[in-house]
Length: 190
Ligand SMILES: [Zn+2]
Image (cartoon, rainbow, N blue to C red; front, side, top):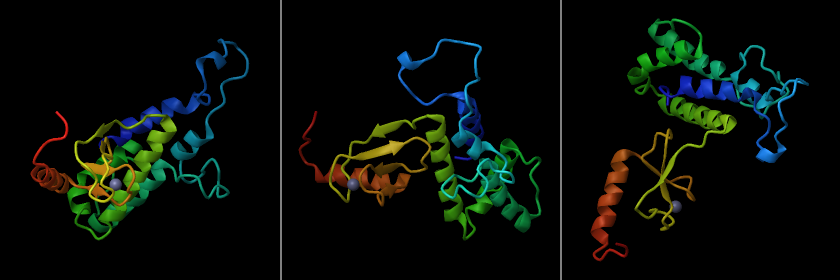
């Protein structure tokens, strides 16, 4: 997820001028009138955390990218004394990547991963990039439906579209595949 962040941020930045998604017939022909308004959702997530575009009022709004990365980077600095080269998205993600192995052994590793996942999701949503999803050839161990997918950038090998709790690591997914392959003596599909 860290590796993909700088590109995702760049794509989100490029989406800042986009008018609300509408049909192409609504598209106004190029004119020299008022500039296309900037999207507040994009600005609020990309803006510097210190002077957030929607300062304080917007409790629902996402904390800007730099704010989230800085907070985790500061934690790394506190414990390792190694500072990021710069406080840009690239500098901060590199800093975090450099200490990723160490970070994964800390007690806050799960929180760190969750926040990165949420950030990635927010950026994808705001920039309009849908993560690629692959339907998997297994049934969900909980709801027993053919709803298992692999979502690009999620960090999971498999998850159920209906059951939020069903998220499998690569090893767990391999086990599930093995179980189901064994259970099915006659394949129902070619
Ligand atoms: Zn399910």
